[in-house]
Length: 356
Image 1 (cartoon, rainbow, N blue to C red):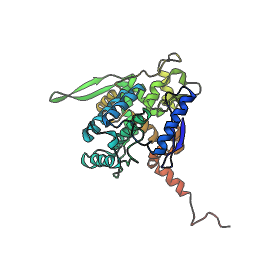
Image 2 (cartoon, helix red, strand yellow):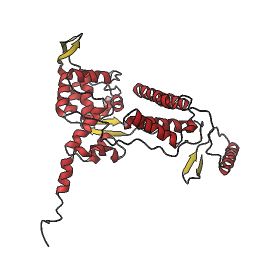
Image 3 (cartoon, helix red, strand yellow):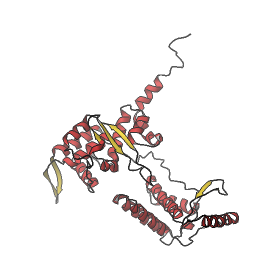
Image 4 (cartoon, rainbow, N blue to C red):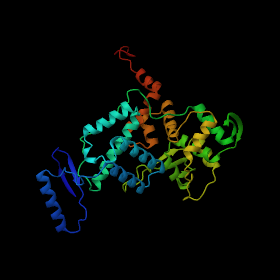
């Protein structure tokens, strides 16, 4: 590994490949030093790599690292959108600051895409560039800095369910009921039976704040009925050889009831088998009971939002959600105005309780 400071004053580390002897390391370092002194380090090693090729390599890399089928489809859709605007033959080296800004403005102002959508596409391009550097196809990113789209409308990219909505959904999943559905040109009433599997999953996610991947990774050895604690494995952070970091969620009454009703398997058995139709099943159940659309991930937001509205400190919410940075939990701050008001209400600068 070569550790150096580039011309911009930024520390860089370069991992040399195919180094087997001290002699080959010395030759590689001499070649690096010559390029460094000539100012050739920032030149692309593959002048002809296109944006489409870089995005294709990104998708293949994510699939090799076991990304979900949903995320693979999302990346493919973003690739299609990006290349339809910039062109499949667009060279990656041409994506300077002006080109990236033009793309951002076109998607925001002409296509009227949401800021989070535009930013996801920009981040996909950046990820493709970082992968191209890691693969040795280019030496540096062609832009200096990406300026992301800003949402000035106050639109929230997340939503949560109200208590009455969760009760309505869970009762329907647990006991079934009559629903009115479209039938040809008219409507008809159908009896829908219980869906214990979806009820169990929905109950667990609402009361634990788990990510979907954490739920599918849950095994019976992680369910401690004696101490009333569930251990969640942070699959989202278990990447690039880093160990998975567990966190512990105390069981409330709903979780205790859930794990009491579920047939307990062996310690190594998963609690919730993977269900590729989970999103569709949840959407269908929501339609049956007349509720607006919510994603599976919104059950996690519901967990955190109701904790905030109950006055739970953001630090505790951050720990329960498994956020590495407490700032990620600040999105819930506006849901606890009374707690903030009570805190400010303790200040009495103009009228002290006592005068010394």
